Length: 90
Picture 1: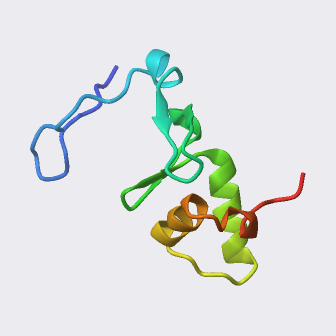
Picture 2 (picture 1 turned 180 degrees about the horizontal axis):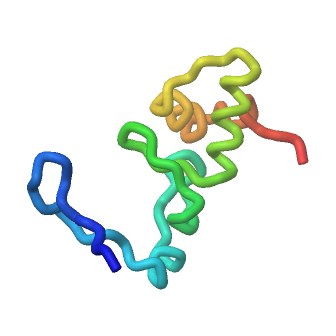
């Protein structure tokens, strides 16, 4: 059986160990869009922001409909009263 190298491409060891699959599904992250916690497996990290699955859907739908907000603009809009412009029906 071969072993998998945990070294980075430059030969340095990684800064942190890979997440333990047993605990990774239990971790929760804070969504910057809706300001709620969500399972880390459902979160998307873009730039310095974390978006839960629902916020990801809103953000991607906005892009598909022709709007081009940056992740930061999306978070600002959600926090400062423009969230209805991103609301998905259903």
